[in-house]
Length: 148
Image 1 (cartoon, one colour):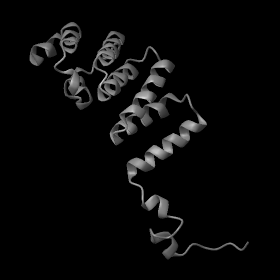
Image 2 (cartoon, helix red, strand yellow; image 1 turned 180 degrees about the vertical axis):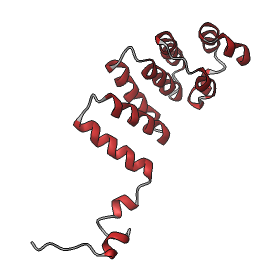
Image 3 (cartoon, helix red, strand yellow; image 1 turned 60 degrees about the vertical axis):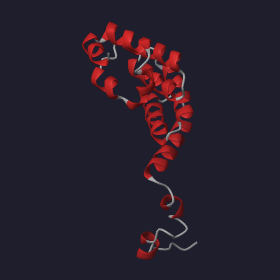
Image 4 (tube, one colour; image 1 turned 90 degrees about the vertical axis):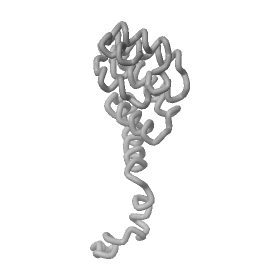
């Protein structure tokens, strides 16, 4: 088969058959597909799982993100960020008590970004819970005073 040099039309036209799948995707969908393919090649890659969980959450696919966060906690059980992200996913899927337990674990393991914790929209449903306020009193007393 003879080699055909690409023309400026084939490279520049988004409706060309070769570019159509990319032109119809937004950046988030492209990244999701990319990291899902990476995960197929390396199913226990913690960095890929973290990034994929974040992207799924941004896309609003909270149950899928929860599945990823559960895998992460199983792979790195002593990682406070994995437990924090699990708490976020559990909250987003309406599982308040398990979310509080995951948050408790994250804090016990050393999660200390209290500024982020205070404004993270993923945890909004926890903010009025007594268990959330108790965790703040225990791990971040300076924040607990402002939450009441």
